[in-house]
Image 1 (cartoon, rainbow, N blue to C red):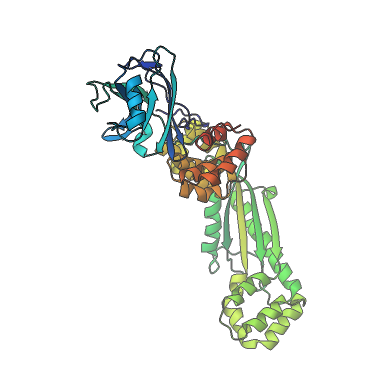
Image 2 (image 1 turned 180 degrees about the vertical axis):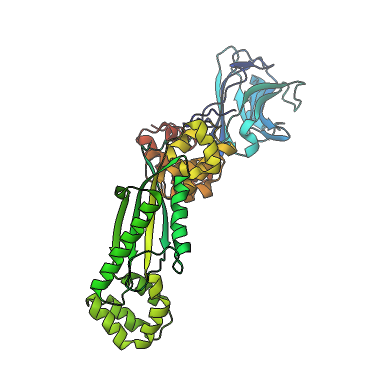
Length: 473
């Protein structure tokens, strides 16, 4: 059955009655079969039908054996038979019993000659995958002697009991502004106590080049517009707090001025901040060293002392470690962190179909969802969209729910459960969790989740529950 490209996926027909091959089948014996139903219930297939025996002629000393057969390709399952006996044959049966030639259990019925006679037939058998689209027929032994009539299989119905879940995808909330960021850190070199940037000084050509490359990446992208540039400068703890404050602030402003002059940016594009002494960075460095006095140094760093007394105590009590830190750690504490914030334009669905294959980070979740709607549900392209979405937005509940649904649609329940852990507690998510449990045969665990989603008004959950309950109110 071809599934439509809608996102409310109609799939769980398994609990509904299969469409009969004939609304009313008349057998060679004169019996009529009506209201044939083939339904899936948990791990069973339930087959029901009504038989009218009014026009069935059975000689008094004879019987007719009716036996349903479920078959698909080379697989078959004989269902319990019905033996309709004439008066004398039934009397003999009651007194002596007899050998029945049917396969498996037999229900014996006495034909009430000249009277209306109805019989309700119901049986269940263990579900097997080959039964998904099996044929149900009725065979007849008109003499009760184990001889099935030639061409004596009357078609009754086609089964449709494959468990294909009904899933509810959620459209992500549309965003009016797609904001992205590029981050970096530059380690600029300044002459001692200077705040002027010399582009050719020591490492500065490489470090300034990193910043320019980040900015140019956005400037040369026709789909992007720079919204702001943030810079935060850090100085190392040696020297006085006042001097370091001047250096951190002045060097941050120098980098800002360099970029304004380089690109003719507006001053209002920038946001700046500074950290006079990078004690946090110093602590992180010490923590990962093997210094013998590491804990004592960390205790000084974590103390409530003011910065200048703290640095003096560190220098006085741990001179050897202090010299090592000056050489190996302090240069890395003097840095400039920068963030280029930019805005990506919106894309129509035709543009988005191309971009998702090359630069998916430019798309919003809503734009990706629109792309998915252009593909057949369950197709590789359809599933690819939701896989990309959850990788780019790994903590978004909607992205996780839709990715889980795509996996459930292909029967990958265990993989889907990983995404469902972050899919929230909406009715759609509870429905998906219930489906995942159903696919694993954990029916009793699935039922309360599906009932919760159904009670919240989710029609998909109500349909999914049909495999679990009978006559659910």
